[in-house]
Length: 225
Image (tube, rainbow, N blue to C red; front, side):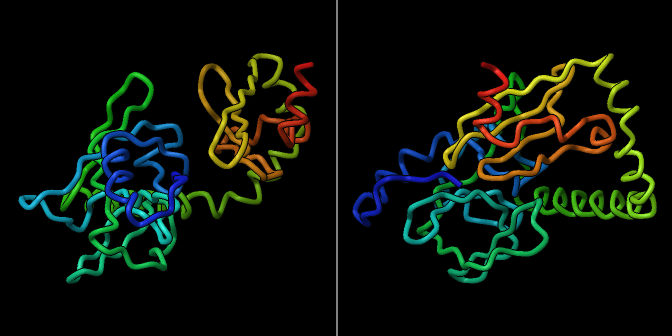
């Protein structure tokens, strides 16, 4: 979500024009299509290109204090329903055409420009995402007890820390400070603002001593004093 400061109805056209070029992704609800810190290129809709199922759209939520970027899953008259690619269920709200800022066409991810599929290709892409999620869960579920047993073995964590350098970097987010965990230049975990539990990617939880990681911005500052 992107917060805005002006809530007046008369300011909406100006806000729409301002955000119709670039936005920064700050949520994981569209993973893996969009990732946190992606710079998003937005294009407004026109008479020749209407909203379609499969489009990734940026739209205002009432009372127009923030912008959400989710994928369109149905279009019926003036009622548009959306859902995040990483969410288990559709959004609870109905989007009106006048609330839509535009369609996401590209994501700048570091030095790489990622094309964002729309329409039928976008719908097919989400089907593949959900199938991959299902396959991963089917694979991981039988191994879950063994995985958590291994994650509690201190020897693996000590061995990993001996050969691999762990780095923690803080990032300013609209809702607070986010800490991110890196090893070998690869992000393997993050601590979102106002949360006390780290989100560490599998299988790295086997090798990371989560107890030793900072649980807040204050802990992080104390470590770097």
